[in-house]
Length: 94
Image (cartoon, rainbow, N blue to C red; front, side, top):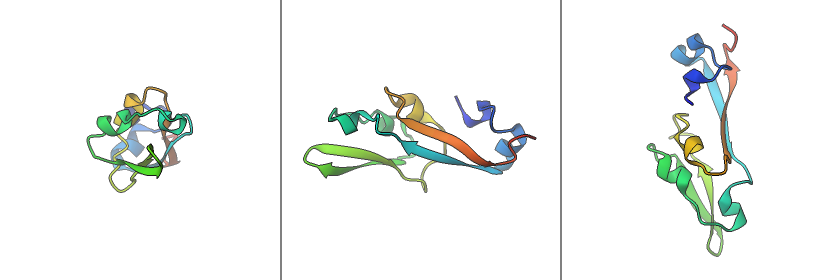
C-alpha cells in the first residue's frame, strides 16, 4: 500500500508534501534472531537500507532517512512485517 492509499494522510497533504513519516525496524526482524535475511534491502530501489555487523555473523538493518522516499517497498518485502512507515504530522484531516 502506498502513502496515498493510507487513510491517515489526506490527498492534499500527500500531494503538497505537508507531512513526514516515522520509520523503523522492530526487534521482530529475522536478523535479530540469527536468521539471515535481507529481503528489505533487496526490495529497496533507493538503497536506503544498510546492514551493519554488530556481532560475528549477525547483521542488523537500518533505514537511511536521507535516501528513504517512504515508498514502502521494504515494508512489502519484509516477510515478518518488522518495518513500519507511519505519518507523524501534517494536514491529516483535510
